[in-house]
Length: 333
Image (cartoon, rainbow, N blue to C red):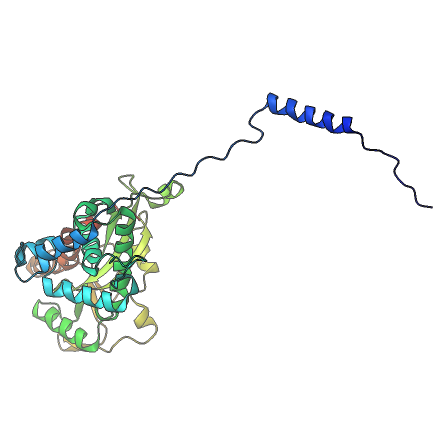
């Protein structure tokens, strides 16, 4: 036989509960706090259409305010090259295509977005500094820079960030022989780039000497400032030799897919090109260093010529930093 409850509800019970909750509310009024009012997003009317018109009249109209010399100085390239980049990006990268919002208002033009990116690269300034002229916000300017760099790599990487073709190698070998180094195809070295926004826990791993964290760029450059090999991102505590152990610079040779080269030195034929380096690199057949303490006129002449031609890669680093200050200033990655 199942049992049943014999409790009966009384009105006095409800009154007691109400009284108890009232007492709790008086003791602590924050039990049920009122929700905070959500702040509205600040909207700034930047008049982007006026900014687009001013930019067009200043640099891209038939009678621009600023001529070709000022354009090249401020954009770090001539106008036809810049327009080629803009046209490729606006037709092949969705982010740079002209758009309209829900009200039918035109968005930022491809010229505005590309100009914002170039100004940040050329002058090494923050994303907020292009707002007053190009008329786009800090977040948008930072996104333009990121998409611009990614678009350049996607569209032009196969052409300009490639390994030398057989034709390129023959040209490099010819120039090397003309300069007194038959078989030389470039100079290899490393550059340190100060890292500003580094994670605090990584400071020790990326700091050396000055105590400032740096990222290392390994590069091979030829006489015409063509940087055709890069390896970037190694910690600043590593030296050139440590970075070489990680570098893919010899992957083509190891995998047997490197183009065949042929050159003669003193009547002897060789099939492996080499790079000019400083003294820290190992004494491999692919590296030619200077003579530390040259004795005799022949050795002195060789050391002088080697140290002179080896400056190609250092000159490439210098031109890169002078043309694009973003590489000269501390990295904001």
